[in-house]
Length: 208
Length: 208
Image 1: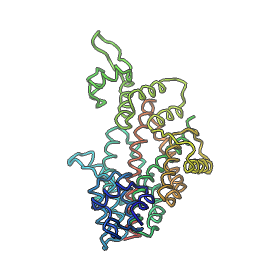
Image 2: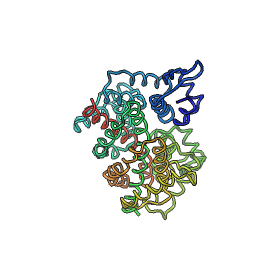
Image 3: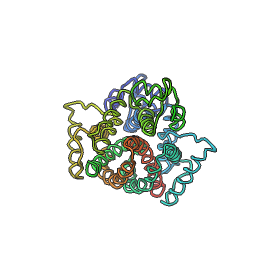
Image 4: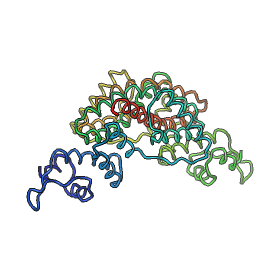
């Protein structure tokens, strides 16, 4: 297809596509004349993935390029591909060494991971976010909210297999990666909204 | 206590406390001399709540004042108080009338609410977010992620009673409201991080 059709099908404006081509986020099309190139489904999927990372997850262009290079390596398993995308879209936080509240929270998170038997890398950015959040909750005197950690973990375990299966069911590797970006970010919106509605329901029944 | 101790115990700087007093977010202390006022536990709780709304939930000052005025009304039940705080910290979205994707998503959300038997107000901001998110997911061709709506709803139902009980266990009404703000926002962080770790675990076991 020509660039105009690529633009129509992806919803990405032609000048933006040209910018992605210049930045190396999109491989060049096949030249059909000195001034015209042809693009295929791979370009379309790659464009959608790039768009999801930049628009939805607000990943900087340089980082998007690094993710795409990693995805293009033939040696990565599907698990490793998902990990690369996860890490790219999860902001990592720097922990302040020596802070005793954080040390205690870090121990608590490690114990939780062991208790649930989760196979996760020790440098997962989600671990840092968890430790940071627990420390802040305790410093705000909200220890009763930290007690919800296990019920939360138990609840997320109930849908995770379905989430991973939904993402892994895509055939094109770029579609898998796109689905991880969209599912991570918009799935959070779905969960947060449903949580508020479920809270409103219980509050309405118990506290009216 | 004097303003210096109020500052120390709340972690809020004295000039900020004076700003809140001028803006009417904090009731004046009891004058003990023409230039000195005394503050009590109510001021401390109110200050913590104000801080949580402004810092954590980024609620504009004018809106914080409206929330505090509503909380000070004697006629509100605990359920209504929680609702006032929920609405203040949840950004509402304007829906574009006549958009067929949104109409279909709205029907789907209404069916979900009926299916689960949730007693929620039709104008809850979380409903608008849910409708918006489903529309976006469909427009991105991610219908397989929309299929996760029911598993998500089922999962959040498992901890909601605990969340509402944790919040309602606080004795001071301002502490309840503070806990709602912090629990809503930081609870989302906890859930999101645990979800990523649980996904990493399943991905590691199934797709490595």
